[in-house]
Length: 269
Image (cartoon, rainbow, N blue to C red; front, side, top):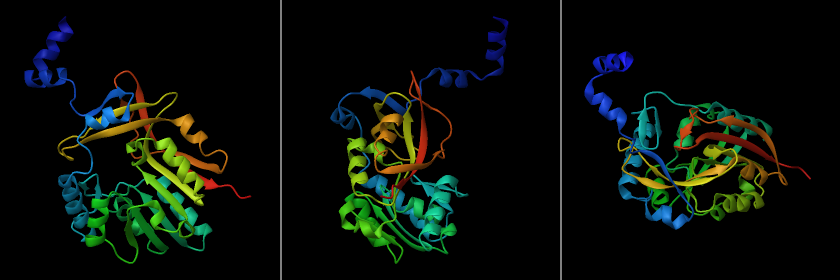
């Protein structure tokens, strides 16, 4: 009792009340049907979100800001060093050439994040995104290096050395089936980054994004890590797995999840 009364004296009452309230933002639910989760979410195709992302990335492109992620600007680049090391390693194996197909790559977030370390590389970076993002990307950001496409088949697979998916496949209706299709395309390398996993199960949730980032919510999977990596075993070797930028556990209430990344190399016959 003495400890509790002391805490009450030291901590302002308004803060105590805030701590009592559950966080309205984060990951919620355990949905069994994809459409139920989609119906309970706002979605990521809002023009308001696109406009906010566009304005942030333009500042990075024009040198007015250093780094952007999820429409938020940072004064320092937050590198995912394993991802960058993987890209440089692949370039070194391919006569300093690197052609990346960046699935769900927004308006080039990962490109602008890593471009300073890839200036010496013969680089092609193609983002595959939603139609409204592709239209915006072509208008404001496309150049000799950075391109935008709407379908994976819009770029010949022989031109791609790396298929990259960073914080994207968890927002698909069936990430496992999608990755089966990607694996069949036999890209020389596949890199997965910033993807949330659970050890022995999976869960479909709604991710409610904090308003300081954007007013949005969308269906989001936590994938079964073992089930996911098993997809690659026949055709790919696992070169490395690594912690993503977010190293802290993700609280789902009754269980904790985590973000991981993987680098896969196509097996040679």
